[in-house]
Length: 182
View: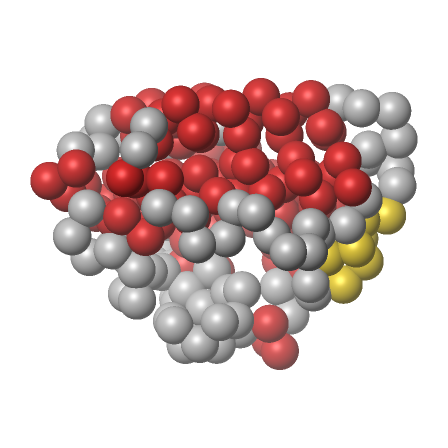
């Protein structure tokens, strides 16, 4: 969350219309998704299920205090994942029932990779944590089945795999595995 917050803080509203590595999303869309996720993850953990209806869906966080909304969501999500039983209990999500620890990995991957998307789209020179990326790659390789992949904009959680270049860093391998050209 901290690394992506630094990237999010450097996004200028003038960047909102720029394309991102998620071809169907602009910078504004990705920024909104990151803030939505920061809030949604904690709601899911606290309720041990995805909220229905989802109060975070469709909110235009970029129209207001983007960082304030992100910080509020992060605080709630971090507290939720630290609550008793949060990592062991099952959480019912739109794509299945998972232990909290697996959901934590998914949440971390989402925030990390979309931070990369924002940095690329806005030309930010950011050094990403290679050790974290290697761990996320190992985790996501276990859960990103081919049936969970689809073209950008299809609603699939992951894009089709892209071949990482020879000698690619862990970050480049992670984003390629999730369907982005590094």
